[in-house]
Amino acid sequence: MRIIALLEYELASDLGYWGDHTAKWETSIIMYLRPELVDMSRLTDLLGVDGEDPRVYASRELGERVVELIVRRLCERVEASLAELRLS
Image (cartoon, rainbow, N blue to C red):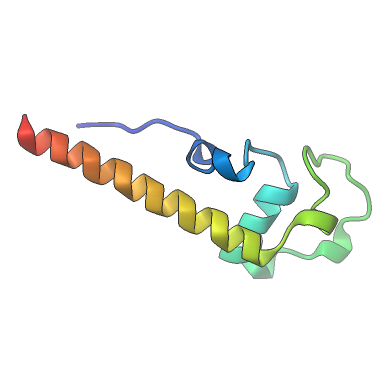
């Protein structure tokens, strides 16, 4: 068994994604994956938000871009790992 241990943002750091909490990146990802869970009108202050203000910087389009990149790069790593197993 092989394990690929990493944080999701490691696959998209070239976009400027270094992880956050309920800020630009996480909110954008949820806007793309589960938009029904995002209600920006309920965010009246930034208590608990660690990163760029999602009211200003988050978007579904950014979420789609980062999720698609992460998935593509993770698939590439899995395929490379499987190829190594086949060769050994």
